[in-house]
Length: 307
Figure 1 (cartoon, rainbow, N blue to C red):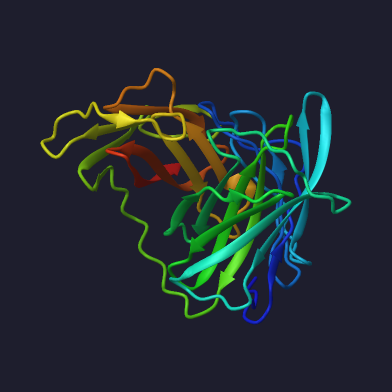
Figure 2: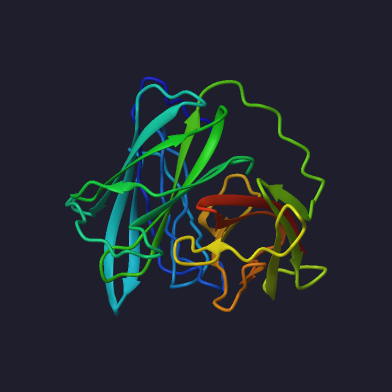
């Protein structure tokens, strides 16, 4: 549903329900529902278990707020996350976003656990999956996180914010934002390239199975070579791992059930970064594999079809 954000503060709420819909093996995360926009709209949220895939269900756009239910140490915590954006939104310029984490009574959640070296991970994608960004909002105390994001084109964007209240499991919250303007036509997604060159690194993707089927374990392998076509041996850790893999199913609208975050397996090597996961449903997925070489974070993206 289209939302008009010009001249109106965009505030988003997130609702997290127990349960996790996607199952991912190598260091995946947890999911929660959320809502956004100035008009009522449906959103989705789900809690995430440790090292499982993120997913979200039910989205509403009343006052852009959602409640999240997390489970950890046999206890529950109910929170709501509110996303606030400026009045005037425009493509291809920095936009300051504020994410407030509160309990259901409106009291700020003050303490968060660090996971994967950060207090919050924010994945921003356009709904056509052409744009991807992995951000780390700054914590300003009193439950407030701030970050500057850039939305390159007009259209619908989904924000997956991943945080961990102290002593609880990860919570994945889904929010939406609309950048006004003329939306470009979608690109042709029929070509599934297996090799991408990112700066000085050649990345070749290969799955352990020729045909990937939903619900089945699969290894996703990324071979890395230098400009001379030699295996590289100089990777540096990125958020404590050799690589991170974000996978999102092509859906409309995007929900938390479409989101998977996997970490490279522990015995993976520099020249071959390997992930283990499951795709919960059949369909077309886009993958963004991120790694650190020469102090710079590189991102190689690939499409994959799941039967």
